[in-house]
Length: 243
Length: 243
Image (tube, rainbow over all chains, first blue to last red; front, side, top):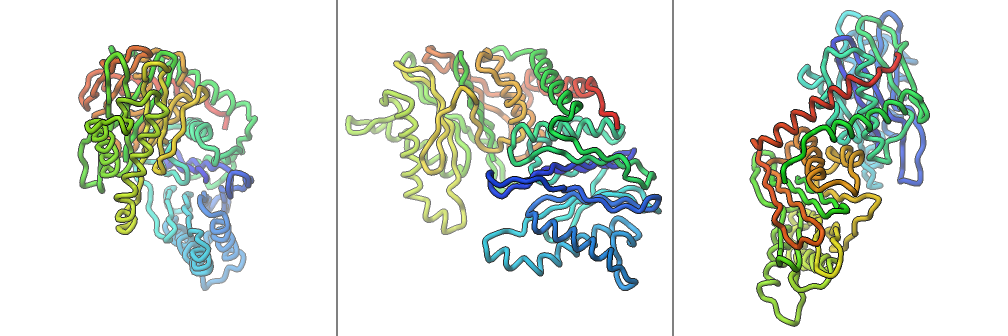
């Protein structure tokens, strides 16, 4: 499995993805699931992927090949004018991969499982955030629930449900996302460090705030220990039922 | 879905189960999923059930019918000498229901989904706690992980992972279990109030500490609000990453 989160806040976007892929518990590896296309000053587009690694890699490769073989005939992530169009391009790439590989996958009882979070900003519109499904269709995030999760999302959802506010600072949101990952990592083996984090400030059109959080990262270790301690203290602090 | 938890602590056992059953989101109802067999001074046996309601009800009915038609030929939950034998009886009942209904369920593309937590104490041995699977086989809880969860277990697991200690007081464990439910209730519609709670003190051989926690229960509401507030305070209290 995988765990990825995207947040759309007043100040910008926050993306985080783990890096574990596994085919059974005895075959695990580290793969980057945070993909970035950047034209500094013009556009920043980030794609987080969950699901069958062969499928997600094929989608990312297709999107990249289209950029490299750009012509006036077709749009690419580097030429579309809106994030909506970018989401449609990713959806089309998903459908293209399904056309090529879907039948063979079904025949070998493998499923065409894949989900993406796509976010970013293209000059001329505000930052936007989408979730793209295996069918190539997608939804856009709303203000009511400003975060999207894909993969192993349940363990890390309670803290997001409780703490997320759209007026958070980006570094505050980074802290929140890392706590959401910490809960997931503790409870589920199929999600693993390092975590890739990218903070995008609205109208910066630059992806210079990236951070790969390694297992032994001193901040992450301190965060994880402090959170456990504070949770236990908060727990102790609440009155018990009279039973 | 369903959410049930059982804990085996130094001081005794704690059981909790929600009461929501649903067949689609437009067909929900309240059913008790905590079942009790008690012979005061001799034995207390508690069964929590998750899965297909027709199956779990059939299993409980079979176990009860066996007791009512007791003869010296067969053992029942009220006559077995150990909790291990009780777990085997439940497993046999699961297999009996599967024999009767399994084929028809499979034919209508319904699955034979069912899991149980069985716990209690029979005079002559300490309290024990088991998880019983759809195949009728089972595991017993260990000291390393003194809790079992069935149903929609992921949202409420991080708090259990972090806070559970085997030396907790029973009322402290009740508080913990209610917080685990609170996280689940907030994030998942298919788990619903009221919650049935039962605290069993070792060697009491009595099930007199039962509590049905309703939606508007003042303690539960205070607990839920206090926990949210303390979590947010704990979150605010932790240093942000320097990004």
